[in-house]
Image 1: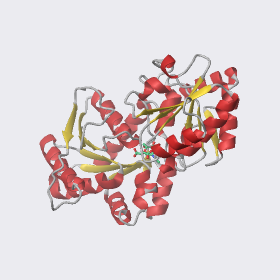
Image 2 (image 1 turned 135 degrees about the vertical axis):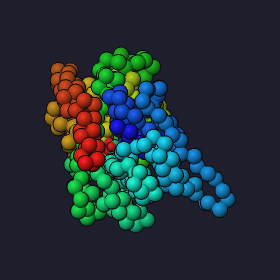
Image 3 (image 1 turned 45 degrees about the vertical axis):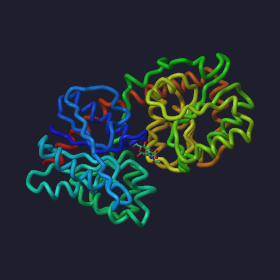
Image 4 (image 1 turned 90 degrees about the vertical axis):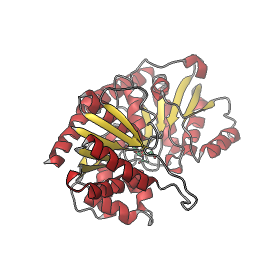
Length: 371
Ligand code: GMT
């Protein structure tokens, strides 16, 4: 098959899933064309059958904002013609699904089928804004096939956008050969042998509740020697830094910024925290569990479909910092319990969320859409 994949290239789950899917499809011998405004950060090397097409953003004084959606349509049309795309797969509805719709109209009888994958904030946050709502609804209804990354997200989409067409759930997956227990690097850079390593990775947006991460850690380190590694960048980074100073934790909390090789950090972590307000899936929790790292998270959105409460981690109501800290302390102070959770986590991911489980589902879905 000739497959076009359009996605955001930046640190974030939707771009990661789109890139990993592209790599796996190319490995299976399909011709994959990734269309984005720069090389996705997870595309770290050359792969046979995988091609990258940059959306060039033209600047002109009349355009106050770069016309990304328009440039994207143009690139989609160009790639679809040159590479005879069968499928154009839009990851994250805004604006990829609309651009794909317009590209399909322009290509008429040479058009590929448009598949849209909904990732989360395109539905639960940004898409609900009045400036996008009707366009998001229209592009979902008009796609040839739509998938969502969790049952939660499918149900939210149907309810919030009054969607009448079917949406198939295909869970995210993780490269279980790269995200492996025991492959951590440079532990001694971050912690002493006696200290536990607790990690959080996100884009530091308010939805991630970074303040809760720091408060949970503050309670943990009162009982257990530990350090907190904060990976990522975003608007709440300053807020987090202020809180760390206010709580006197500056020698225990390390801000590592965006990291391309997050598997090396997750594999040396003893615990992962994800106390988000909302999370359609929580890909990074999956990556942590693949490295054998148990997760403490909020019982919100699609997280319960990913983290098994009492087996691979613990889930508590959003904002219940006390309960999350208590569960963390229980796990970290009981080596036998921690070992069991760590093994459960790895097994759960290998059995349910390996590429071998979900990539064939996308291929089957493409075939169904192609009729
Ligand atoms: O977490 C974010 O805000 C980034 C966002 C994205 O589009 O990159 O993540 C969303 O998609 C991921 C991949 O499907 C999911 O694992 C995340 O849960 C989802 N984020 C939210 O729902 C907040």
